[in-house]
Amino acid sequence: MGTVTLDFLHEGPLGRGHDPATVRWGGVANNAACALGARGARPALLTVEYSGELGPAVAGHLAANAVDWLPLPARAPLPVFHAELVDGSVAGKRFFGERALGLITPDLLGRSHGSLDGAGAVAAGTDTEAPALAWLADTARERGMPFWLLSADPNEVSKLRPEGRRADLVALNQRELSLWAGRSLDDWDDVIAAARRLPAPGGRCLVTLGERGSLLVRADGADVVHQPPVPLADAVITVGAGDVLFGCLLAGRLAGLGWEAALKEATELTSLFLATPDDVPDPYRALRT
Image (cartoon, rainbow, N blue to C red; front, side, top):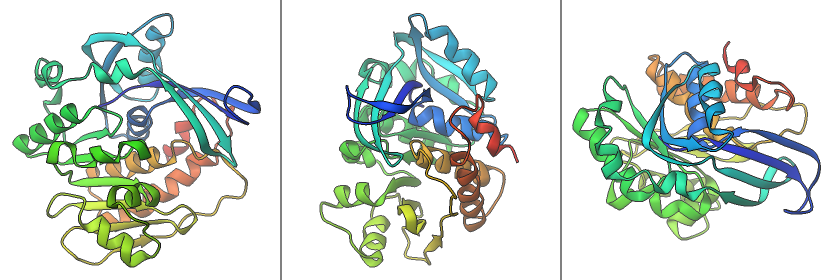
């Protein structure tokens, strides 16, 4: 659950950007859903319905990526994410389209309760409002489904436990974990200790560490899995990498892989996605291996 966005990514300061520039579909939930679709997991994406000239194009985009779109009974303009890149990573950004996420409320979700029928898991990002995330967490627990939560923005770390609920898997980067913990987490022991506190009892926390790979940490104190990164030959745009990793990890788990094997596969697949040239019309094809 979340939103689709139109991403405008470029080198240089906001308002004074320069080539290379990229315009593409984006959004935390969209990226994860498209990764799930490429892996054959048959995902359904809940968003509002999009108004305006580009609204109808969303259906074609999601269908082409094997995502079943379930628009909720509310309308909003398609959001735009505008980002300044430095060495492929976001250095400055602006988001236009809060209405598309703010309209997703517990009341709206309650009127579409049947949308979750047959689901094997529920996932969302912290760009969604906290009451809606709490509703998702409660509904998933009532139905015996895992609830996965992906950090969408360092400014939204307060939603990593939406209204006190804890997710079965929380995915975030080291900086976001430090912000949530309220202190700098400089060594792995500190990272692991903070990560154990974040998910639900028996749950897991996935912490991405950039060039050092990622850590999968269990809340119960069991052994930690360290997954090294896959080296990339060239500089790449890393926007959306965590979303794709999250989607591929969930797809692996739904396919029956163990946690360590699923994380290894997700890491390898994400590297293939990142290595795909920006001008390819179907970047998620790299995940259909």
